Image (tube, protein in one colour):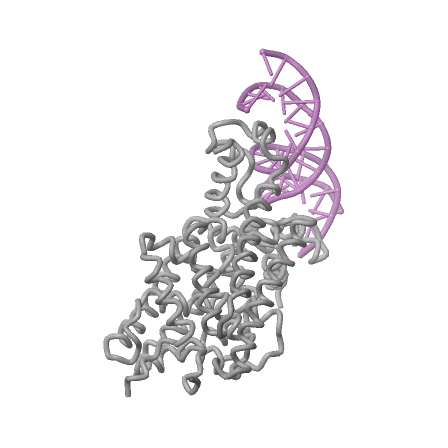
Length: 191
Length: 191
DNA sequence: GTCTATAACCTGATAGAC
DNA sequence: GTCTATCAGGTTATAGAC
């Protein structure tokens, strides 16, 4: 692991814990056991650390969505694939997801623009999958935007819940979340 | 509206837009059309503004949950009431909810402690409603924690989605979200 | 109740010795 | 590649004139 990677790894922990704006370069240097000035031999600015963390993750999501779009399947199967990919990424990168959710607005210039582009494209792809399912009768004719929002809200904040109960079984989590999001929580066998 | 209330109203907009840590007292004074020092005739610290915004809202949620606990009804009816209350509060205070979600960790001392206490109690009350429903067969025997998390994630981030499509009908929103959270999105009539 | 001035400190980032 | 020293500016908050 290069020094640069170590810096980014430490930043992930601190940024997640206290927020990007509350962590100073001196704070970051302290946990690395050297001085703030030395950080600049490995990175060129604080914002570069933020963009490396968030844009790598956003590109990761974009790649996974590309795979989902390529499979030949119905809408529900594709939604299950999106959920599974999202959970896989969350279990591997909970800190980066938290930072992306909370601090993306502190990206600057072209980094900010690239992030918005990737996020909007991801949402648009998921919207199309849902619309397709509504149009062919797989999904209820609810407001597509509300379905999209409910799914993304749950998936995007999974990291915060997973943190409190780590050690949870990944496959079990996928099953539970897929069941709840797609089929709801009411037991039809009742009453 | 007192000057103090005007300051807090302006702070709600700025804190939501850029985050508590990124808004300086000079920024806040500027939109009020006076100087930073003058703010201190009406408030005693920046953190006091944050705590007023977030703790008032958290107490509001606690009161609504108290009403839900008092009604005599089954689990599903209580969950519907929680969803309706949450949506009502969101439509009235979208800025405060965003700030509470993103910046609660910047509360200090007793404010921080009170917030955690209120939030944990709210989650615990909701957990009990869900557990009751699972035990009497109303709800599926999914992981209670996953159900709790999925509901709260959706409700807590509703403000961000509502912002982009304001003017949405409140009752329609309640119906859609209740349907999706409780009954899922798959159309059982299909295949 | 708002102002100017300022205290005391923190911020990201750079220059240059070693 | 890490250090010390420092720049140029920003931060919350206070003192005291008006």
